[in-house]
Image (cartoon, rainbow, N blue to C red):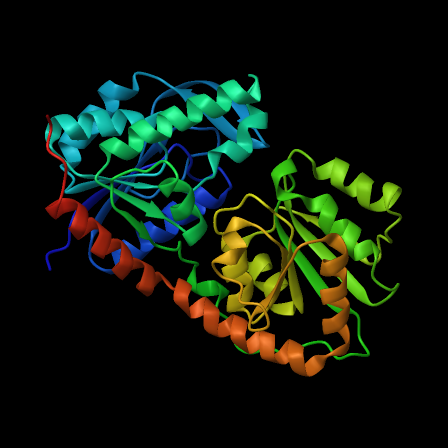
Length: 382
């Protein structure tokens, strides 16, 4: 099969920190390794000054911050994007958002009869609180935009079964494939020695400190554990960085010696955190897949998570972790694994096996299969 030219279109890319940027980067690396010609087009934001040659940034105005990340408003998007697409001559356009660049790319693709694949990374209705409009209005506008976009693209990628089900509620006729986002090879580490029952269990959280991640619930579960039976390291950043720490120390009375917060760890530090942890905690109820779950499992770290759409596609109760319904159930699961070394070792083995489904190689082959389907069944301009 002849390698294709792919244009990734995303509103968010490095230095913006988030799951979409990580996913676009990982997909690009996977395709490049297969000999594909991949270009990324995104917005020009503060701090974006060391891009590789395959990244193209469109002009922006009004630089600002959103959730502690740099963003900006695109300027003359259609004209600049049209010129880039005519230069790159992609075989397929892979959009990662249904608005801004994703919307403009779809219009240009239709004029050029170029197939478009859309990855539905986000359950957008869970983020309406960031929009300064009444919830019902925002929710209606999101639904209408998504339905229109679904109908116009050639193929939809869902990163998990939960997202595929959410898309199907809109009864779209556009084909949907489930393709999990990959994780970088650096997260796959050798087997490790877990803490013994005489040592505090090392607990880990990695993610943004924002409302939708539901971090207070995790801290409340930890507060129910026997004193001295655990150590929690919470790694990340976000607009609730200070509020979460105040809640942990002042409201819940957690000990700073046992609950520690670490701001924006680099890749090497993250690998080390995952490797030294006994259990990974995940309280979010809105993530579509939670790449951090696969990253943790690649280090042999089982996951205890509150129920949510992303975790259902990767966590198998009793095999690589547990999905629980309440704060008290989360605390009980942690405490059980504090005393049961044999079960913890079993979950660790299961976690490591599960992570093999998220390699770059597996992802590339799944992605290429979707591209070929889209190319051969593309919708014609009417």
